[in-house]
Amino acid sequence: MRATIRGVQETIRDPDSAIDSVMKRNPIAKRDVELERLKLSIERNFVTPYVRQNGFGGVDAKRLERSIDQIGIAFKYTNKPKAAEIFTGQYLPPREQRMVK
View 1: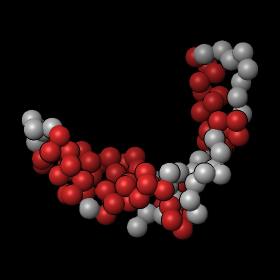
View 2 (view 1 turned 60 degrees about the vertical axis):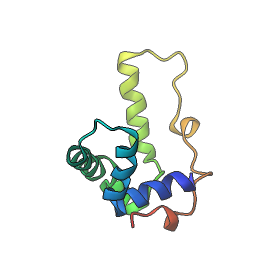
View 3 (view 1 turned 180 degrees about the horizontal axis):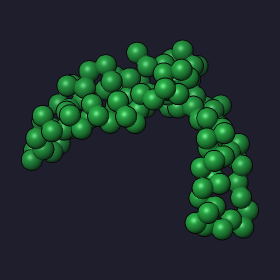
View 4 (view 1 turned 90 degrees about the vertical axis):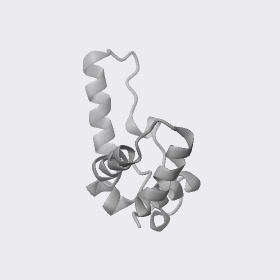
């Protein structure tokens, strides 16, 4: 978990270097397009208000419960899970190490 969170933090800190890695592996990619896509993804999907306040890796239990309820609209549960059965934060590094830097 620490390595994944650190990688995301580094990508946010320096998206240009992160795109260098993509470009090495995808020779037909267009650097400017991929950089724009990454920046948009960071802005809209990674650095949310919840993440700014609580750091990476955590889960809003009430939001997760609502998501479970929404899934239940389309797929009938035989044994509906609770948020605590799906997520545990026990393996996350301390909050201060998970914050957006």
